[in-house]
Length: 245
Image 1: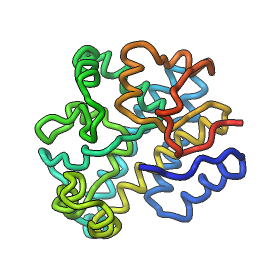
Image 2: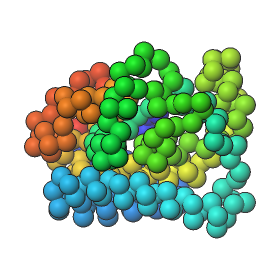
Image 3: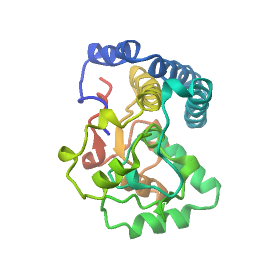
Image 4: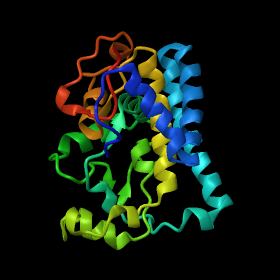
């Protein structure tokens, strides 16, 4: 689920941002929508930024629904359906502020203990701890990377993620993946992350499940991150974006 190698220069950050315009209209739409929300949220402090993160997720979903209903012949038909869940058999990545927003929503819904039980009971395998009978138990709160994964052939996912064949022996992912939703949700993710990084705030990609566990049990807090005092285990960081200079 990687977006780009870790880089450490302003020029590299600008290159990632400019690449949105070269890739697709969908990614540009997701990027610009997220950037505007993130800039507004930052002006309102931590609570404002987390609220903006929720709006970024919702708006990206609305953009995709509009794209899919407005031009179904252009986006293609996805084989994804409720109860499938093969794509949930891999490591899931998310932005750190996404994890804080998801944790806050889980707490607001009174599901903290349930979520912690799932995360604590996970043996760290490929299956997401929130996967149950082929469905996601936090579907409305799932990360942006999960939202962008639509495929044309469910059998490809079954063969690949169930380990029936090695990914290198499977048909090329480009042939089964719908590019528009991936571009759009990746664009939203970049819009949020790069806006924060340009303002000097660390916005790493992280491994979702173990990071969420740290947040829910209080070992990792949004307040400490906002003050720049967060101690994030390096093993949980993904190489998506550069740290701010």
